[in-house]
Image (cartoon, rainbow, N blue to C red; front, side):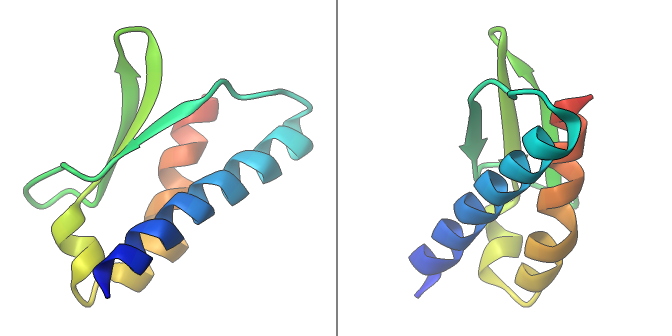
Length: 83
C-alpha cells in the first residue's frame, strides 16, 4: 500500500524536474531521492558529497499528510534544487 506512495513521490520529483528544465532551459543533474528525514520537517534539499539530494519524511508519506507532500513539498524542494 505505502510502496505506491513512495513511487508517486518519485514520479512527482521527475515531473517537477522536467517542468523546471523546460521552463528554465537548463538540465538539472540527477537528484537522489531519500525517505529517511525524521522529525517535523516534511522535506529538505541540499548537496551531499557533491550530489543533489532531496529528503522526504517517510512517516508523513505514509500518513494523512501525503497529499501535502505531493502537492507542496515535492515542488518546493525541487525548486531549491534548481537554485
